[in-house]
Length: 449
Image (cartoon, rainbow, N blue to C red; front, top):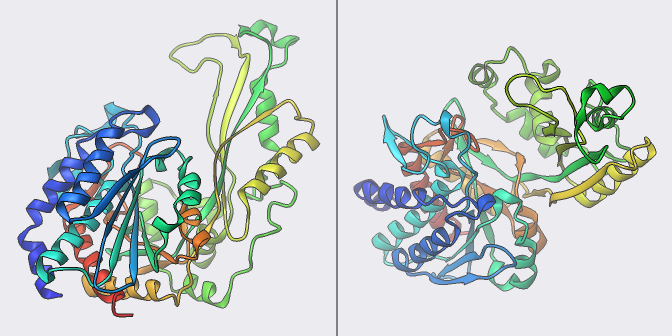
């Protein structure tokens, strides 16, 4: 592979420019901004840069960009990515313009650089470099690039149900991946699922002067009391049946947790925190991070929160919650259990708005794709990777992979300070170039199995 690696080094400025061009498109799905331009850009990249057979697949929302590049074998490796990004707010906290893809001291700053355009372009560049050096590919490559990941992949089920033929592959490289604080590449073999909801509690038909709080119920207080029934101070979720489907750790899981390198001191220093939740550390910290389901308040809104004082009794209160789920929890069962829990505690009036539902997905440690990616990271970085049995995060892995019997593994070009979803999102240029080499290595080695 040294010939391919050298080609990547010789053409790295070109590959950096490719990424900058894509990052400069503000493709914010939540605001329907730049989406068609980004979809067309990715489609053209797949067609013109790597001679892919391409199509824009319509959904009830933004289209899926699909591309296939034939190889010499029947075996097929697919890549799942997304061309949408998070909103750039709060803009005032950016030290570099969020959509100019500026490079400073070896770091590229841009919304989408890490999540997910850097990973997408690294894969396109890897295919390109391999083709230029070897004249073709040793296996078929598919690209599945959606435009709604950052808003919950709300139409990916539709795509999955209607286009199983386009999805089918022997293995899938999932969207994300990072280097840890110690420089080790992180390889994830799955993702948690999720039930994401909004709870709405309504009171009077208008906001009132807070003097009326003596006789008019405050929906904000009522919502707080409802939330207080969901979880105790030890982080135990009190919804009946919540843990019924949670699997016990297998011997392989136990070994993976034991061997997992997690940079606790570096993470606490980065976050300016004295300790982790519940004073966790070591094995118990890693086990909880990977294998424990969660119940988290993502945001609360009610009444007046601007500058100064306003004595108001709000007419409505809202909270967004996410429940991160592990095998074999089902997001719709959790939704039903939440409804039953609220009703049983006298909160029948609180509305539940379903926002995003994802089943967990997981690939075995000994799957050929897992072994190939883990080995490839060693070749590129000369370090043992950090193998995550499951990522603490969530994505539509199950609907595109496990549902169709396709193993999936995540690896990518981000770093532990990439600031995904936050101001000053970034990647290291060196990580991006190494990421291209890594994917080229996976293409070469997976074809041999």
